[in-house]
Image (cartoon, rainbow, N blue to C red; front, top):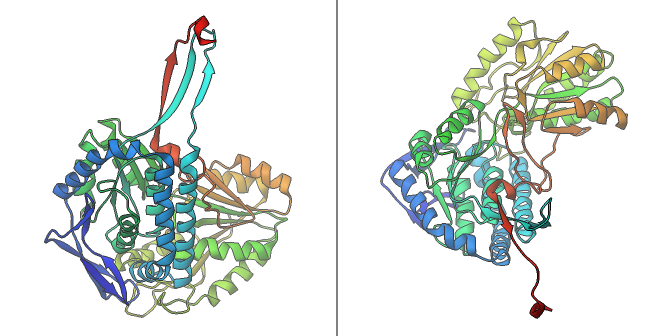
Length: 489
């Protein structure tokens, strides 16, 4: 059942109806830092997916009836177990995804905070009671779990995404089937093991790994018993899932692609902007939907910004995440090799490569941190997500052009603006057509904040006070009260 990686035990089977199940079919998981084989993982398909849905459906009524405090206690128990297993989680994330240990540890601790947040939110799901507008009856609104939920998680943040989705769903009283990314299945398995050890009832949390996502997701979405999809990934796949779900009107939450404009206005603290741009761009080797996709800098400060930014980029250490490095590998050889086409596109559009631009000669899938500068606004990257350690800098003339260029995209996930003037920041931020705006900071994720985007970046919000409600349906009851009898008094 277990695969041992550097002393850490990670289940490699499927988890269905409260038990780990081997099925005879497997796929391989590789370390992107050196291409070595990490494990053979159970390769689920339609049969296993529907068995997981059977279990989730059987468990749904009982789980939704569990008292909020009891659900919260289970989540608190899972949180405590997570903290005890930090090193196992961190090491597994680095081996599977390639991200440096420091980044994996930061992801782990944020994930644990999210789980704690949802544990604390369970007891705060409140309804309303009011008089009808014309009198005569009462309006009672309560919240009920949506029902069995399919959680589809990506490889770039393999722990944070499963915790943010499963934490909300379980807190709301929904049973779950999680489909992990085939590149990083063991991190998800470690989390499901935590839920098992914490005492969650069988059938409440199920896990299906697969090398063929459609073979799992499509039969589940076509089954009318599935009532919710929560997906993080590309806009193309999210759109397809929404189309599939339309047949049964499946409730959907989609956290999709991004095109994060990182705007540096003429009065910005340039040193702060440079430091935050480095984090926002090169975290996880640029493989993040909220990464700075277009760095838009007022021409009056652009030379100084670019000079300092390039200096810091050249100082970034690239290598195996198990060592003291700043930037790890791309997730696969395919993802690394596509960057040559990306650079060709940028240079043909007039971009100048200031540093980087080549693959690192090593066994893993590394690419040099790269900076490409444009002397003026250029639409080459509008509505195209880099998802790579490639930074593009665009010089613009003034606030109006910066805002117009920032909004010139079909995406609307994360955006960033740097200025010393808070009034200016608020006015600019309110005009940005994005679900999230970072003001003088390049990292925004927090358990208390609603995470999500507009336009082609998706629907719904994860975390914050909205996160649990994504897995709840409102029920309105009209209650005739009538005149009280004298015996009541």
